[in-house]
Length: 386
Image (tube, rainbow, N blue to C red; front, side):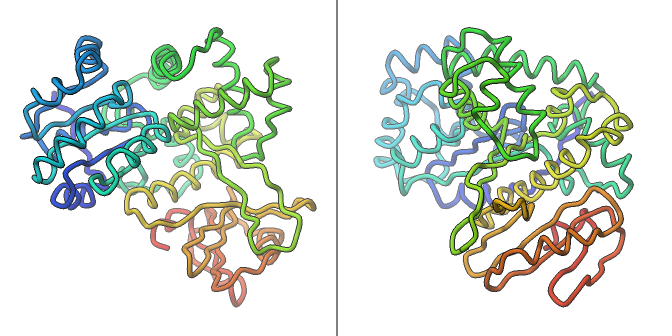
């Protein structure tokens, strides 16, 4: 039986870009559906993948000949394995002005994006695809237990379009990711210790990151911890939310907060196998916050809104969970995994004064409510409408 295709929100932007640029790049973690999306939209394109060792070696041996022999238009997956071809793609598109000739994918975000931007400046449109959003799945559960059921399941396309053992999927995902991508990015000798590092990070989801404390608990050096964190961020397994401290007189915390781009992987690392156990756990609020941050990030990526995401915390532990800087205005958010609006949620939003700012509380409360003249409490499932 053919797996049902679920439409992705980012599709119109990619289709538009193919008419305007000779090269398109779609990055994102493994298993987010990059190839499926592209082959659905551009079924007439040829398709090759550098996951295939033989194809990869051929391209590395003679990248000029490889590009010259390609039948375009073409989709090339996992292009980070053969960065040598980028300069030859540049030569090709400079000699051939046809739009949409190359569509590239990759799962090592920052290094790849930097290489693409530098080599193909002015010739390429860049996009990033994360796992499904609630908008794409078509249902936004309003009951906490239903919401946490989706969190445990996660948002990767495969687990949402197939009958599959969730625990087995994430175990396999981790094994594949660690043994394939980690070895490619850096020579990590103790893969078991690296997985322990990931589990320790998972226990800190939604919290401010203390590298020294993390390194000590994992029995590795600070430098190793920084390198491993960089690997996880580069492959977009984790997302670091940076603190906002510009134009603020107070002493703001300068360390980032750690989140996982997929809550299912996060729940798996923390060994929460059911919604009931997760909902009753001490981590339930942090993981709900993780989900909301990712939902808003997906909206930003899928529509390329261009907002910059931050959080704020000062030395007195006054904190705002999320700040979206849109250049001319700000949106400030408190995220609460409950139905009752606590006084501290409103109080926190008053801690800093930013120009043209709108203030929101996101929770399981089912109706919109004006808390005061500049703060609106809304159901979390309406966050994509803001």
